[in-house]
Image (cartoon, rainbow, N blue to C red; front, side):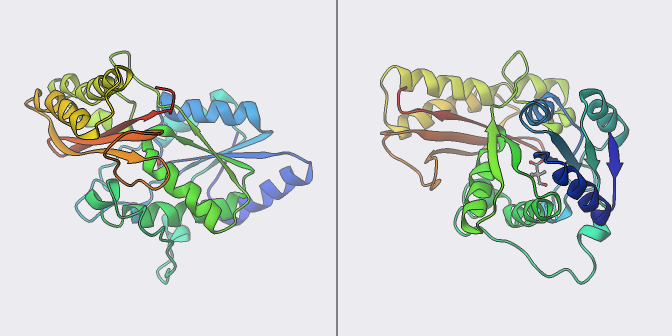
Length: 283
Ligand code: PAF
C-alpha cells in the first residue's frame, strides 16, 4: 500500500493505474476505521482493480460547537488495517492543501441538505458535498462506496452526482452492527458503559417499527409514537428526531405506501448517534 499526502502525487499515481486499464474504487472516510468502513473497503477490493481509501477529518462539515478537535484519530492503526486488507492507496491530504486560506467554493444540494440531519447540524452537508466533490475530482473513481448508516448523506451525494453529471457510480452498502444491534460508528468510543447499554434503543426502536409495518400498520404517526416510547424508556437517551420519509425526496410521509426510510437521531449527553432502516415496498 502506498500512503500519499499530496494531491498531485495521488493524481499522477492514479493516472498510471488508469493507463494500465485498471478500474478505480474509492472509499472516503474520516478515519478511526471500524468494521463498517472495512466492509466498504472489502467491496471495493472485490469489485475494482485499484482501491483508494482517504482518511481526512473534514473541518468544513463540523459545526462550531461540534467535535472536530476531539474527533477520534489513529492513523497508524487505520494504515495497518488497510495495508492488511491489500488497499492500493491510502490518501491522507493536508488540510491546508485541501482548504487553502483563499478557498471560496462550496457545493450545496438544496432542500436535501436542510432537513433532518441538516436541520440539526446546519452547514454539515455543505461541508460533506464540498469535500466529497473535491475528493471525487482528485481520485476520479469509477465507483465510490458509502454506508447506509449515513442514509441522508448517501441520498444527497447521489443527487449531487446526478445534478453535476459526474461519472462516478455510488454504491451504498448495509450498516454493520454490534451483536446487540448498535450500528458501528467512530463516535461509539465516546459512550460511557451506561450510555453504551442504553444506545441499543436506536436499533430496538427501528426493530419495533419494522414489526409494526410487517403486521400491516401503515400510519407513520403511530409507528413514530411507538419508536418514541422505546427511546423515552431510556433515561440517558434524549431524542433529537424521528423521520419517516420518502427515500428520494426525504419528505415526511403520513401513510406508508411505498418504500420509505425510517431514520432517527438520539443524544447521549453530548454524543449524538444516528441510525435508520429502509422499508421496501414488499414489507
Ligand atoms: O461519512 C463520512 O465519514 C464523511 O462524511 C465523508 C463522506 C468521508 C466526508 O468527509
